[in-house]
Length: 149
Image: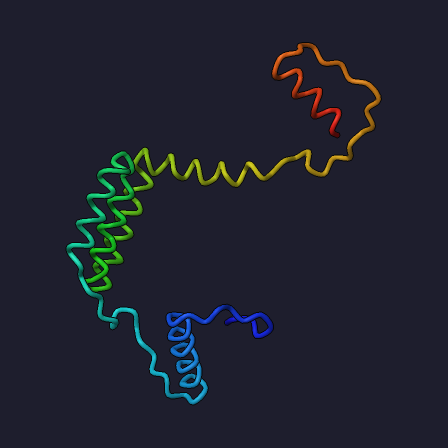
């Protein structure tokens, strides 16, 4: 919901979206908003869009097994929910077993480990003197960092 103190610029799209959201909120308050089950929502199967996505993945991510499976899962989403969910589960398990999937899991977990620095809570000690051996790029960088600290 937009902040009433600093409203965003109202564009036609935002005005339409806001109007739809407010109308739905009014229906909820009135108790007249009918619930819709996900499986009952009509999905449109767009072969051209799926083919374009397949071509893009084949060109840019040919080595990523899971990318193609994602597109196929989207394609399956236009059919029966149970079939689509089973395909999604089978594809997920196949992706976990594939080397590219294991690599992505490794990268995901490694990104989270980078932020866990054990020395982050350490109390710095006063430094009166330092010695730097070498006057090249690394030595001058260390010296500059020490002077700036």
